[in-house]
Length: 360
Image 1: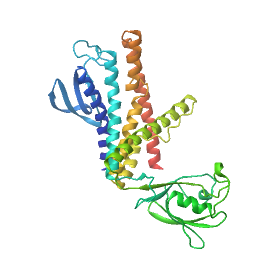
Image 2: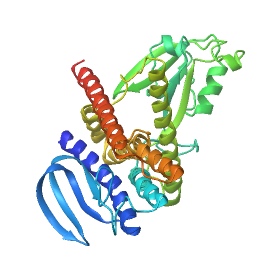
Image 3: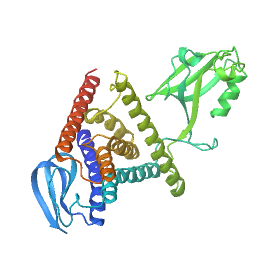
Image 4: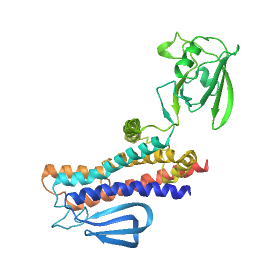
């Protein structure tokens, strides 16, 4: 069931991407010869409407649109993509990425409306949980075995006095108990544990005179969000995800430029099985949130300037607009083949890492 869910998410998001190309092409009068769900060989034809053949194909990992006069096909005339104005070609290419971003917004909105774990500012919110977000290396919290993601249940001194379970409450309590042993109860993966730790000075560099235990805290809740706050939260989530994915991609590119690309933390389709499986156990809201994250990933990846991707094709369209003539066909086919080779090589490496993680 998890594998089917992974396939369903990938097919949905890729079809949404192709739908963006489809809608933009139709708006600009470019003929769409085929809109396919899945990849060939063809299973059967669903029908023909508006000059477009709609098909269902046997390889269930995405979808595609076939435009009249598109790259690699020497065809000119009414409705040809090759004969469309360069700016129209650019809009058609960007439309796929735009649809993935729009899809991510609606998926995040659905997740927040159903209720997923999210940070809140109101410390009086009922049913809120206090989570450890990060640990300072070498701090009392670090040596006590605490980890980011642990839920703080209680924090008390030897006399039984306890901290108010808010970020401010814990900060005030720890600051007033420098050098004293404190007992912390926390939950990790459903299991409750207790740890002893002693607040110390110089744990936080910028505030070395204040006793601290070396944890970052955030108040979170799983309660659903009303309509307008959910809209705002969804927009911010799309933006933040875009930044995180972009930074991760830049780290890989920078590493590759220095001869040491790090792909061990990159998850491919095989690795998604375990990730989606974990999300499904937490509820449909988490599945929607994960699908939104994947959708933003697809948008960012498609902007990479590799000829086989939308980003590479946009670069070529821009160059053609500058030189005022089509790029040489042989050069285009060579670059396209090189781009496909690089993508396949990346998929092999990522899949190998996925399988290695599963075996480990």
